[in-house]
Amino acid sequence: MVPNHSPWIHQLNRTRSVTPLDSNQKTDVVIVGGGIAGISTAYFTLRDTNKDVVLVEADKVAHGATGHNAGQVASYFERPFSELVDEFGLELAAAGQQSVESAWTLIDEIARDIGLATPIYRFTGYAGCSSLDQVLLQLKNNNLRIEGGLTPEAIHIANEWEGIEHIPPEYNHLYSLIPHKDLLALLNTYDSEYIASLSYQKGCMNSALFSEELAGYLLSTYPDRFKLFEDTKATIIALGKESVKVHTSKAVVMGKSVVLCTNGFENFVIRNESGPEIDTSFHHMVNGRIGYMAGYIQPLDSGPVAISYFPKGVGTLSDPTGEPYYYLTRRPHEEPGGESYNLVCAGGPDAVLPNQALYSRDSHCREDMKDRINEFLSSTYAHYPREDIEYAFCWHGLMGYTPNGVRRIGTEPKNTSLLYNLGCNGVGILPSLYGGKRIAEILKGVSVPASIFDPN
Image (cartoon, rainbow, N blue to C red; front, side, top):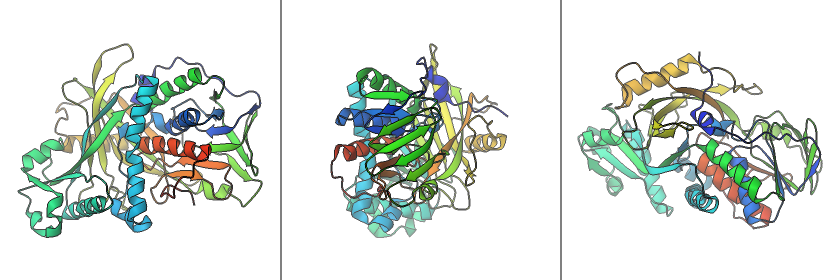
């Protein structure tokens, strides 16, 4: 077995010292969680309001799920758009999708405003379909996207595929036909079972490096309004009518609002001292999955890409029977102080974290998960080396999945002093950034419209 060795943490090369909380603090906003959600929430709150912010992190900035993810920047939900329409209606579903896509602009704003040095690669990404059911589902999604005022995804179908005759004529304007060999080239595969592809904007970035750089910017730009305490675990969140107290092992942070930007599995207690009980519902808000990923290096001889491969014969991204969809990214990866190369990362298999079970980031990568990733790469990825390769990285991270696969962003109905920006749902970078902006608007007193992200 190999250690949990993330390329994003490896690349971090952090020099900032850890400052734990050792005395009581008073502030306007307390943020719990120092991943990309917490740091982004702090950034937009400090930029767009005049409020003071204290952020507490149990470990170090970006060393949780943010430093142990797939590094893919994508705007899709891990459930079909048509299901969101069924649950929320077309108007709200389309607004929710547009909100996530708006985070591309937020990345650009941050990069411009702070002079971001962390590389962000943006390109057209792809997803491969292998069955008629999958194709019909994506065409239905595209039809609804257009009806909701969204930009449709480009759908290419192999012109040799015999299933074309089963596509209803009303979908004819939603796809284009290309030679099968060209389709497989888009998907970087030699697996002829893939007969269609979706394409839309995707990207790659080291969200740990991004978060650490943003934290450093906030500390230097807002020294009088921002304090960051690491190695500081919240134990009790006490909610008054218009105030909060976040208890840690050594001290208390008192504020007017608290924003939980966690993965949902911290062993703290929420005490609502001015209303109905919240603790139980919060700790059942998110289900845990441990995602496993592996990566190897190759020469810097091809451009960045991000591709998803839908399960064979399954209509949605994730098969209820447990068959995963796989995802792959390829991008330049720079060794600290060294040369650059391409890093090819793949993931897909995961394990459910039972209720109340403790996740250990220090546990080793499971060999069976690495074997499954290796089998996928060798059977699917066209650029996979024929000879035996050595995986430079193998890692896992705890992802929080809300019951309906939609991030929770907003105010707790039972006590408005408590707010959330949480629920990775497997694709968390863009929703985290949008969530930070939305939380800042709420804290500023803006009347935000109803949203699919509202806690309930």
